[in-house]
Image 1: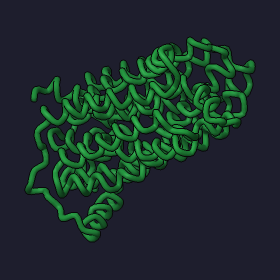
Image 2: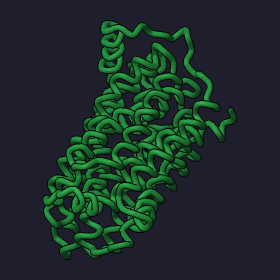
Image 3: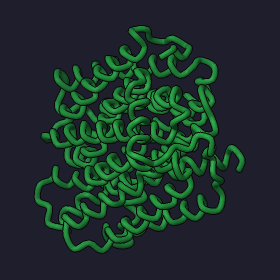
Image 4: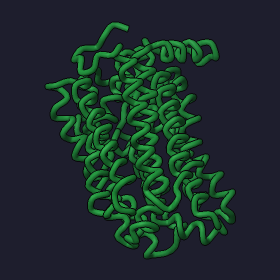
Length: 401
């Protein structure tokens, strides 16, 4: 497989996870009305249930892939995803929808954990960061088109068709992966799938200062993104009354993040992961501070062009943070890549999902809870990075741990 096809496949494997979240957003109001959900904030559980299954099950896919290789566990997860998505199209109640969303998340976790393990199998160091940036660039195309796709799908029916669409797309990716992706796992790194070996792998990950702290920083920072996703429909439609233009505004932010990932892929080989991500983190904190002050002391609500500008600027910084922090966390752990990806993925997604749920459930009809959430997580993220680097930011080389 050539590099271009490899990047495209890895991006699509990760993208079906984003698809499962973002394509739902235009349909949340219709889902709530159809299944008798009266509390607006409770509609967010459609996303939270998926993230719960997605986060917890990551703990198992990594050790499985370190024992049985990458292909078999990945295929299993993809099949579970397809079946759950198709089943969700025929649910009679909101509770059963949440159940299948949980199962869908369990299947989707394989795509996140094992995809990153595959990339780590093939690349390392700055080259891994460059490839991950290109993967993220392609991956970010999905949030650009997913809300609009969801809106378009509902023109031909109701929200049930969204789940069938997800199942069909995932089935196509599964077929592509089955016929084209070779096994990348080195048998010399095979680890027995026992409780003791899994615990040992977890210990290796959790006792590595750099990996642990960058993962915790990522968890808090991604919490702000999940908080936005949870409350995006309420903010764009409830506050700014965008109506059918909601997918366009959502896509604008995703385009900014995709462009940021592309720029990162061009620069990371020259300047290094730490210089770029640390600078972006400082920029993220600065923009969020300005955004918070304007939200508190400026007009209510913040004029939409100004809101979108500040949000886009913050998300541009976020694009430099995400792929680099992930590569920095994985870099010292290549010999236990599967287990490492599981533990780091679980911590990042479970933590980020929980923080995002808190931010989303804090929605009170204003943008203040979201903006405050962005500010707080950026401060906490900076604290963890300082611990990881022993107080020295922008250091270009991997320190001994």
